[in-house]
Length: 435
Image (tube, helix red, strand yellow):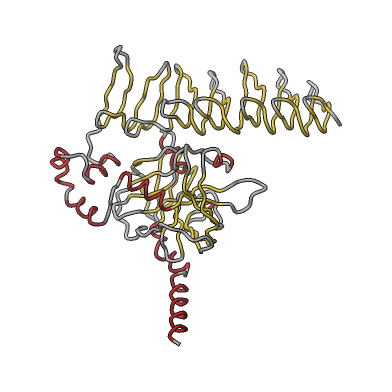
């Protein structure tokens, strides 16, 4: 009898804890909506969530990456309707690394995510809260389908950012749509399982959704907030007035690290730094002798403009002379790396896709222009036409529209005469019409 009662008690407790109404009520206010504005109009949005009482928000790097440029402005919205436009961007991992970012607003949330899991069970119930397709504060459910190690190249196949190493991730069946990125993934007890990050977008794939697991996320967080706790945060608030004296003694205390991370009360100075030959190397904000904040780097004949983080820049605009040459991800040596756009000297978009070590890599869309004349528009891979595209005559008329393979007409397509009339339509092989 005791065994039966104990079993019923356990089932009842599990039923209570797995109630999605309870999870939404407990954590909906901890979830925020992140919007990117251009000319005061919301262009992109995503999700984030509070990870402490001090207003720190965890989200995905790709949600806020455009906010690192001067063209876009970040805005954070709370469930209670409050809007914050003074958003401080803290440490962001390289988008090719773990795709996480920390933000901060001047707000002390009553609700925040404070419990997480360090182990996972395949088949357990999961819940995610976010803003899919702009449908604010939606909760969906599913199961934990698997634990995955996603490596560089594999994520590129999922049509998202590429990574430099293995990322410990979880696969879930809960529906994920644009707007969910950066949101929390909970178990049935409301403990954090991970951060919603990407989904596989293919006709042959259905409901394959992934998130950075909570272990990876907390490792990223603790890298910049070691052993953080409410005791530390309370102590931090009390020591704010003593900041100058405490940092004069040491730069390892938590107070200094948080202030350094979010540039709070720090003396960010605009400086011009010269190289060994007396030429201008950098102009902009500096922190502890490193490029930090808005600045311009002069490097090997080009000018790189963007937001620097502790001496590094991961996203920027590259100018050659007065002309914009490139906008997108940058590597450790300032080479083009990750998603980006390449422009011609006259300002036309030449390539939009993925770069690796400064070279075109992987699959992308391209507008190929020569002498101000559009030659090709379509899919591009491995430095050649690959996939669906349009090839043009010099008079601007379409010469061929269809599939390319190895830079040659190959597959179903239509060829045209110079006057625009149809020449052949059907299957092509190695540039020759077959049938």
